[in-house]
Image (cartoon, rainbow over all chains, first blue to last red; front, side, top):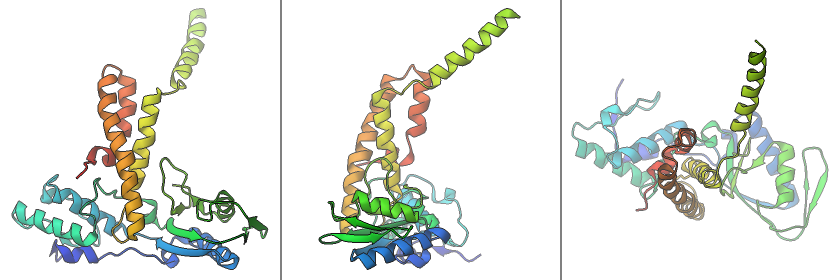
Length: 187
Length: 102
C-alpha cells in the first residue's frame, strides 16, 4: 500500500456534502419530501451540510490531536481507504504537517477534540437554515395543509417542527442547542 | 427458608429503589452539559458557513467550559462515593476533557 505523507493536501481530500443525494436511504427520501413541501409553501431553505465522510472526521480527529502533541504518530490507527502516513520520521515534522492540515480543514481554533462519529457520518443528519415571511401553509406527510402563523419564522418554529416529524425528519432535541440541525432521530 | 423468602423480595425492592433514586442536581447538570458538548464535537466543520461555525463555537464555549469546570468540582465532591464517581466518569467524554480555551 502506497502511503502519502500527511500535510495540507490531505485537508482537501474528503470534502463534506451539502447535497441531499448523499443522505442515507429512507432519511434521504424523508428530507427530500419535506424540502419539497417547504418549497411549495414558500419557505426559503439554505442547506449547510448533509453527509460528512467518516474519512474526513478521522483526519480532523487525529490531525487535531497530533498537532497538540497528544499522541505518537506511530500509534494513530489506520483507516481503510485513507493511505496517509502520519509519521514523518521526526516528531516536529509530523506535528507541523498535522498543523498544516488543521489550517486547511479550518479547525485550528477548535477548542475541543473533533468527534470521530456523528449522525452526519451516517448520512442521517442535515444542517439547514429556514426562513419565510408572513403566513405559510405546509403540507405534512399525511397530506394535511398546516397553516403556520406563529413565530419564529425559522427552523425553530414548533409547528414546522411537528410537520417535519410527520416526514421522519426530527429537529435536534438533545441537550444544549443546535438550531440548524435535523436528523432521523433528533440527535 | 422462610427468612429467604422474606429477604429476597426486600433485597429487590431496596435495590430497585436505590437504582431509581434521582441523581443529585449538580451531577444531572454536568451530564446535560457534557452531552451537549459531545454533540457539538461531532458538528463543527470548517466547511460550514461562518455564521454557523460561530454559533457552534459559542455553544462549545458555553457547554464544554461549564462541563469541564463541573467535572473538576464533582470529582472532588464525590471522591468517596463510588456509585456517583462511576456516573461522573462515564459522562466525562473526550469533548469535555479536551476542552481548552485558546
